[in-house]
Every structure is written in C-alpha cells, then in structure tokens.
Image (cartoon, rainbow, N blue to C red; front, side, top):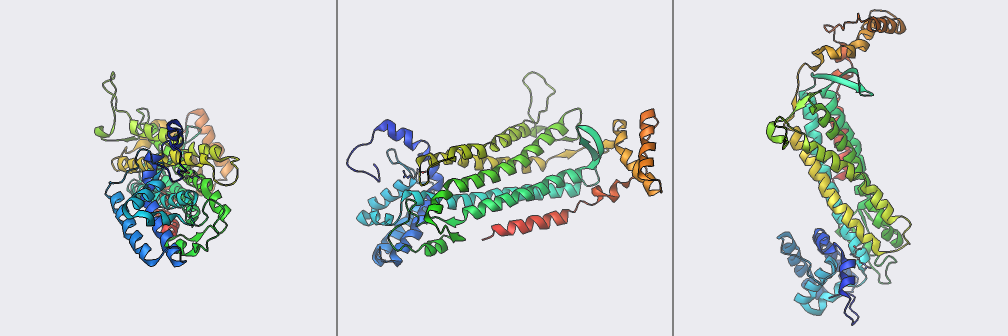
Length: 431
Ligand code: ARG
C-alpha cells in the first residue's frame, strides 16, 4: 500500500531495498509526525482548505493516534513505507475520505523534515540533561576531592602537582564548551520547514508563521529551498555536537582506565562495577570505561559519515537523505547511555590518598621549590639553575612541608564560576 499508488504493484525487492530500516526507525518520529499534522491541518482550516467540521473530525482522531503511540500501540505495517504513510492510512481508515485531505500543501519531504526537527530538538534536550547530570557529579567530586593531590603529566612524564579537584573540574568545564555545541545544534534544528512542501513551496496561501507558532519553533526557514537544504545541515550540526561531547567523554574514559592501571592505582571502583578474566583470577578490569572509550571514539566518526553521505548532493530532495536516520538515531541513544553510565560509575569512584608522598614523585615539586626561592628573593633563572643542579647531582629533596600549591591553581578551582557558565549556556535551551 503506497501513498503514491498509481495502479501498479511495486516490486517487493525494490520496496525492501528502498524502505531499509525506516519501518523501525520511523517509530521514533511517530509522535512528531502527528504533532506536525495537527499544526498543518489547523493552518489548512484557517486558510479555508479544510472546513471547521472537518478539522473537528480530524483533530480528535489524530489525538487518538498520538495516545496510541504513547501507549506503545502503534506500529508501521508490512507493506507501508514509512510513518507518514501509516498515520495517513490509519486516519483514512477511521474517518474515510476526509483523512486524505490532510496532505494538501504538503509533501513527505517537508513532513519528514518537520518530524526530524522536532525529534532533534527533544533529543538534544535529553543529551543536555545527561550532560548536566554528569557535570553536576564532576563538580561535586571536584569539591569533595579538592585537597587530594595527584601527579600532573606532560609527555606522559611526571610534571607538576595536580589535584583530583582540578581533574574532575576540568572535565566539568570541558562539558560547558560541548554544551555550547549542543545549543548551536538546537538553534539550527529549531526552525520550521513546514510549508516548503517538496522543497519549492506551494501555490496555496500557506500560513507558515502560524505553524511556526503552533510547533514552538523560533522562526520558519523563510526560503523554501533553504528549508529543504536544512536536511543534512541540521544533521551535520547534531553530529558535530554528539562528536564533541563524545570526545570529552572518551578522554575521561581513557584517564580512568589509566588511573585504574595497577602501576598508577590512583582510582578504584567497587568490585561489582569491574569485570573479570576467564583465566586470571585476580583481574578487576575497567571494561565499562573501555567500552565507553570505544563507543565515544566511534561516535566521533559520524560527522564524517554524514558529511560524506551529503557531500555534493544535487539541490532538492534526494532519497540518500533517508540514510542519515540510520546513523544519527542510534548515535544519539548511545551518547546518552555513555553519559549516564559515566555519571553512574563516577558516583562510586574511590580516590587514593597521599599519592604524592611516594618518593617516585619527588621531582614533581621542583617548580614549587624554584617558586619558593623566587618568593625569598632569588631571580627565577638562578633558582631554576640551583634546583636543576640539585636534581642533576642527586641531592634534590622536595620541601614537602612548604606547600605553595594551594595558593595557585589547585587552591582556586573556580567551580562556582564554571557552574554559572553552564547555567547561562543551558538557559538558551529553555524555550
Ligand atoms: N523515508 C523518507 C525519508 O526519510 C521520507 C520522505 C520520502 N520522500 C520521497 N520523496 N520519497 O527521506
């Protein structure tokens, strides 16, 4: 059964190939499809393309379908191409010919676009909530462990004192940059394509401002060709947002794997959050963070997939665009799962005390000792040379009693400022 039925039966193999994963993936668009149709028919009635009586029949029927979707009672039947066709078939089945009237001035091209924009808006909000939860956990851990020093590394060589306060707080602040990208993707998604029809508009006097207001979009895509072009552009922005969050999370996962390594043993987790080996009885492995690292690395590749899929497509709708759903729908779910898992795991993290008391970290205090001499009046270059010579001749001993670290960056985590920054970025998502 096809919306475009012209009296011939389509070839089954062609149908299977072209429908692809749509029957399953489009289920996630179903509620937005109905919401889009409700706005569209209200607008059609306002310009005289539907009567008041017809609207009063159609709206409750669409509302009923919406409730069925919410109860999980909606599916896309065998032989039906996509969600757009399914909703219209149900409507026509229940109401007769009036169901066929809802598609005036619309094409599946702007219909799927509006569904996707509404879907991405919600999905980006979910992502932002998961980011916010992880952010809160990181800030809480940064405060809790602010006095616990750890080695800072450059070139993977011990460098200068750092702290768990700085480490946790660093990832919290990195997430504020990622949140900016989520907000940017949200703003790109938050524009109404409805009324652009197949991509070149309609000769009906469609009121595009009205559907923009009804669907709470910031504005319409004014140019109907640009509206169609936004399929691909929106996905690129969403993929970039997912990729940048994944890069932060993948980096964090790598740090945890390393700090859990027995040679560091800076952090640990309760046994039940680790995994074992089938041959080595002593193993407590960080599989959670390894899977997270792998998933996050993979999530960074979707930007390339989307870019290649859409590169140099001819202007206007092309069916290639459908394939972006296969990439982005599971990616956004996977990102949310990774974020939530990180929040869950970090809730149980145990941080080792007194790490820097081990003599293998003695040299980490050389800069501290240079700074101490500078504060006592010695020129920096002389102080540097004096401590350098002590290291060279093996006579260097760190002045552990005098701990200047708390005067500088370690003592000034600025978590309140970081929180205020996150709040201000998040406020753009509250529409
Ligand atoms: N499943 C299609 C997609 O996601 C829906 C739009 C179909 N439009 C068309 N002209 N064949 O792109």
